[in-house]
Length: 60
Image 1 (cartoon, rainbow, N blue to C red):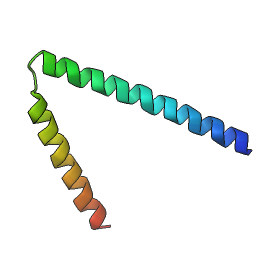
Image 2: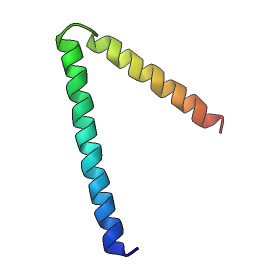
Image 3: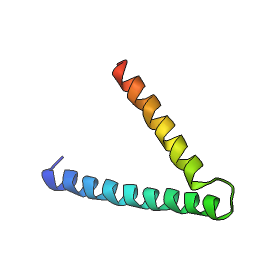
């Protein structure tokens, strides 16, 4: 695989990551607008998940 192929694949991954992030953000905003979740509940859950992942990584 050439360096150009690798750079092309990295570029594609960045675009896919951006689109996925945009889609997730849109879904979250709709859930908040429809009062299905609150922004503070969302932030709390993010912090909980981050803490769990950090603990799991420490145990590796």
